[in-house]
Length: 383
Ligand code: GLA
Picture (cartoon, rainbow, N blue to C red):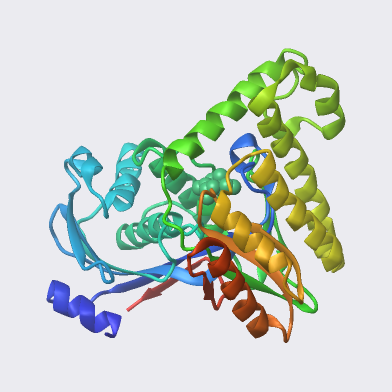
């Protein structure tokens, strides 16, 4: 149903605001944002749309059009919403805004999200950013889009219990049509690079394996790299984060690490170098080099960082074996979710058929392929 009509049906009145915030892919730079590294995400056409209107109360009523659930968030008692299933990300955003002294108003909000949940395409960041932008618009408060990204990351860290980095929220808030963002997660300096893949197209595929324990495994990786940094700082005292450490310095210092901790740190140090090389390759239109780096990123996530798992590996390797594909890797937190592949133009339909078939034979799951394009991260319309 047309969403404005649905809003009227659910809330008995018309919306005054139409906001959307995007999901994202990440070309390269995985599991390095929380180590101060460089990342290269881009915002998608898949997005979270929010229709909203002030309701003159101290409550925010949020409704999800696909799940058909409503949650009532009490702005005077935000702690009470910590136990919400759906609605928690929104409450987290309001909680951080309140603590930062930003104005909040009661309102009705209808959510339509085309970013598949739990897919590694950042549906949670899209919900957070759309919520924050909508509240900002309704109250006329102070956050610019970069500050909005930081606020939303804080909500996820402090309210939702996911110790995530800044990449997803930044990509959702700051993404630009047909541009990749080269973001330094230590300084939040960024530049846009034309998302131009020459003779290739980007294909996003979901391995459709239900995620399990992503949050706990994600938080565990963060602890492991923090331990690695502390140990490396005993010999490299000037390093403030793993991304500060060059491969040369790492090779000279790695004797202080062993086992898994050594593997985790090695992934981060070399992935940071790959992002620099990938940015140069993308700027130069050297897609063959970009492809090699994307493949190396996946292999490192699989072997050293151990965040892929059977299905994402099967999907990426099935893609790479298929005609016309020069690169494939998993994106996002991992343990399931999506891959991106670079596929020769004109061969994408045959690619999807062949990969889908092989992946199902290998794993028993059916992959999904999305029609994606790179679009502006945030869109705002007053109705
Ligand atoms: C998730 C997190 C991001 C980032 C990626 C891995 O998407 O939200 O901050 O750490 O995983 O690169």
